Image 1: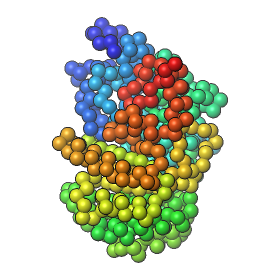
Image 2 (image 1 turned 120 degrees about the vertical axis):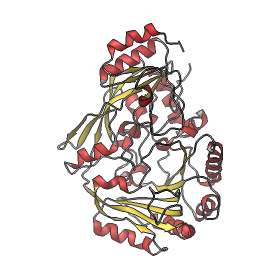
Image 3 (image 1 turned 60 degrees about the horizontal axis):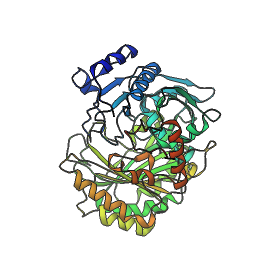
Image 4 (image 1 turned 90 degrees about the vertical axis):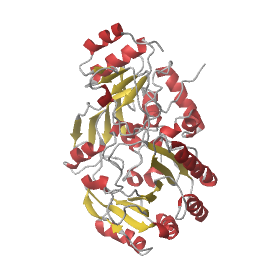
Length: 462
């Protein structure tokens, strides 16, 4: 990497409409204020892009100086520190255009899920968003995207129609089923390894409401709830998406009184069928154990972010994930042994999310998302600063390792976190032939691996 000198920056500033920030500049710290604060980032320069021209200028500047490029919108999924790199920040690029006749949305790179949900709802439509309204829609889709409508319609990546992307050579390309088809395949699942997405066109679906919410059970009933949930998922239709989580709530005022400071089991429900069907499907769960809190109701789709109740405050979140071919009685017992009641598990949330349905089928246009036969994802997260990181990482590693008899592949690309930036973890997130093809495509579009401040897929070497 070549070191930046003041004269370099003076060449960049006139070419960019947005701010160009170095460590001593006012606004630099704000530009590096990300949702996941696992790392303290000190990039050499931040370009707060306001549009395509800014992204083009930034990437061309970086490529000419062999400067690695990191792309950041909301900062939910950090991989490695951005020290001495260029950060292209896309959070100011927030354009949304809905086509209610074609049922599509054209969105810019900084659009968050909550904004897109509200815009689409004006036309009785919904995107394939995730659980949190704060997550960036582009990064979410590039990683796959497993959301509340996933079993009904598939991965978010499956319904990306077109991508405008600035590649490492400083060119703006359109990736679509009939243009740059290798890039189109790779980017949908290959995350941020191939360039900076400036806009994306996606499908929308005729969903205006859900029967959804959460059932909170006492932690001491975890065995009964998990075993009953496992059986229940074998009976539900594809329009029922759900997950179950072992949650250790902190004793803080932000948590409602019945849950504050408690270990609970949280069943999350999102049924896109009728309210009557949803009520009928959920009824068997209500008799498993006493319910501490029941938020399940017929809701407008704009309230979808209330189902999981993901944290809204930034923090140093440590995450690990994997996929399961199946969940058996023994799988449940192993989870209970490591994270159930009476254990000193330091992991705040251990979630099992029901997959299958449309996510198990190949999309109209193939992409890099594999292991579609997986029936569940396992996602673990804890807020842990430097003093607790090693303990949390160890517990997450032990939990994932214990699930080896039922695992399928490695981490889920949708949930890759800071603890999974190791090349072995990244490679394990893909089927072997897929990973090799991703490396070949990377070699064609980014042979110098400029886009490496991420969950990196290195270019193939010939």
